Length: 395
Image (cartoon, rainbow, N blue to C red; front, side, top):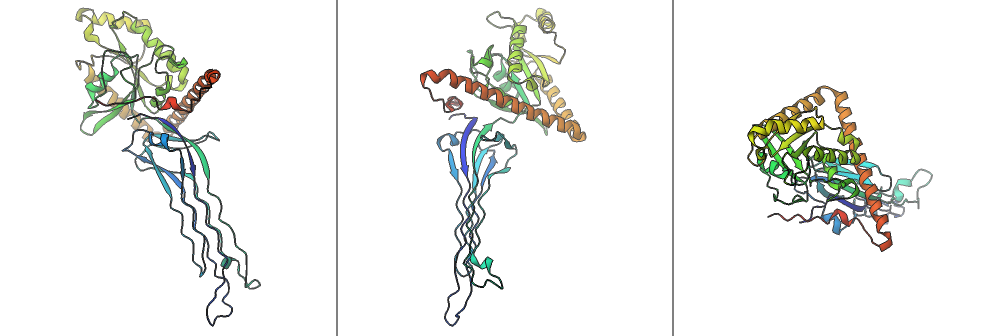
């Protein structure tokens, strides 16, 4: 199936039903008076988070959605039927943006969470509503109002506590396979990972966190090299970044330069995201002779001038992975406790996430416009197809 993390749709709420103009007509009742009923309200449009979904593929093929109109009123003071609301299921982690105003309408981050994106029209009034002591036979009614219509962009960002960064073949997918039950494809060529993979890491009973593996970056990703930067937006919800680096690359390249290249691409994408807590994970240490291992790893740290946490692991053999996931679990719990005990800290964290969202959205949109401008000479209509070209075919 296709992994689609962005979609544009048009939603339109139902119109309100018109009020009815009617007078009571019964045998032996010569002056029955007005009895026109009100119309029904139009149906509204809602988006609902559904954990059974993990892609926005359905919204690629159908882009216009309309709720039902309210029925008009009828005689004998009968009120029209209310239009049925339209509920559209979306994956958990979907952000909804109004394309005309660029306003973020909401963020669906919990199973079953609902967001009203288009208000249904209000009902019209029947002539019964206008009767009075001086107007006993009103011929006045009102029409139902139009339903709200909106152009929306749906942006899916995976929900994870920890995100993995690194060059292609740095061992990110192998690491996820080693510490969780996730089974992403692993091979000895770059760009094996084409879509984000999620894994749940269970440290012990009632202690677990979610880790996200995104396609590897290369130098120049911010300018569209490799798979580009479109998947970096999936890291804006994470609390912690683990930067994996191959300490013994087969091509003899410098591990420290690899770290610097990715850090530079991260800064160009979102300065706020680049300033998130980031731990250095030296992977594939089993490829270095045991006697030279300490000196080799320390040389990388010294070249980087790294002053944050450093871990040495072998994702393939599992060496060093347990202390790493335990340290991550402790850090996540401490952050959660701090947010619960300190409202100011929680608000600052929420503001940082909003800022990362905005920076990511602006960067992706500017890249999209630059791509379209470059292709104008060829009369190429992008039509957001770059958002759905990645194909995920489980083995």
